[in-house]
Length: 209
Image (cartoon, rainbow, N blue to C red; front, side, top):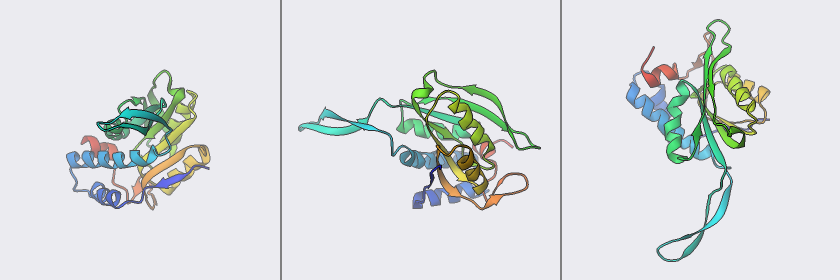
């Protein structure tokens, strides 16, 4: 079964209150998405393996822990997932970035792929799939399936806000994938939007409607 990690932290609660506010402008919304993504990255990478190395400090030799040669790939689901990439790259500067483009059929709400590009050796990577919203779970489940087709074994899903329905879909379809979320909301409405949510994350990140 997937492990659901709800990141219950005062800083995240505070920043979510700004994201949810309909009066928050594009610039501030984009910045807060980045700040929450940074906090989530810290938790989601907790299990990355480290190795012992020696470094020379100004005083003496120190045995310290450093990330080993594990490759890391960030895979945003276009377009809203792009808002989570740069903040995570700042913490993981050697990470590569793949892209999955999906749109949701307005009638069936099923995901349709229009773009998919991954690093050649992604199968050897720890993969983090990024999307601010986990609503029906259809797009996230499809994205995970596409990544698995490349042979990936280590996959985690990062969402800022999730609906119970979407969580259930990922747990059913991909029980081997851990889910990291900043908040779990009440439900989906008739248009498959998360309630209370924050509206359309992509539109609010990029200033479109």
